Image (cartoon, rainbow, N blue to C red; front, side, top):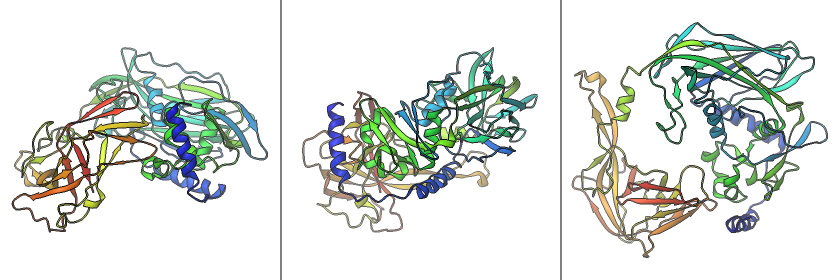
Length: 516
């Protein structure tokens, strides 16, 4: 274990003794976990899956999660426990669940259409698909939803638990996969009974994504160019001990953090208590004593966890590919995308010195956010000597420490939101829209109390306070600082800033912005 990990682990041990052990029982946690999974299942996705079963036991629910890797991998060791509980030793994942999901489809990009892989005769799939489809990049399939489906039939002699991922769509040009319409729903284990069937429907809700990774860095897919393509649907049936154990953890309301971020998710860590970060699902390392038999091996990078024995009986790894159909992808015709990409108010430009009345449609703050709780409400009471004390925090994953460059004794510009009427130029007042911008209404000069030009954010500890004391207060002409009807004011330090992560990654910011 490196020095940083040892320091974080020691801090975690000390902090964990500050709180009493108050955890819900196993059945209560399982109920909460099911409710949480159902709640997140309504999130937006490019493709959705609707499951219906005839003669199949184990009705599943949908949620945000990951699909398995395209090729099978060796299952971890399993030690059966008593009753309906088994134990599996799992490696901590190398990537986040959604990253893994997107990576699975990305693995097809640039290659030929995958072939059906169905070594087992216990399953068969019948696809119901039209001869062709028209897909609008803004509205989805023009002929209506639920255009295609895969009916899965199980003919084995004994009940079999398995996951089903898909159908997902792959778009093909000249024999090469060039795009996809992913299925973002979390595959849920279900027990297939002999002779049982289940229908999985594919619906294009948000158009087609491209394999061009450079068009939207960080997401992995851009927008597929309009044109004519072939499309195939891919459906995967799978199970292994790792998938079963991971599913059981989520049913109990827990997940596993990625290996590289493990030091940031120990008992007492800031993000362990963040509902916004995890959507109600808790990293198991934040509360390792919550489930019986949990053992964490830091050196091996593994964790032993209990899971429902009924979720797994044998490894399954099958892939079913539909016959190709013709599709035409049409561009967005309603102009909404152009409107979003071209706001009527220009954004703040790096190096600009603001002035009273300036309006900015956007500000390039990057991954850094900084709440200043003391400024919520009316600004009328702000006086010389008051503390602003914004708290800097980095959004996103893939880091343990971040250094942010900050100016000494900065001027903090106060911004107020303004709704600006935007006429699309057709002369019809009914089509007029409102666009929000930030207007400069004043400023605070401050004393930062030191000559330090960097602040270090330690992910385990949480946001880092930037101590700023007000030395002067100025308001722009016409702005009433005593007006309490408008209390959503931002503060902006109009100085370029650099964020450097512990792995050396750098990010350039146009400004630092604080919000109530």
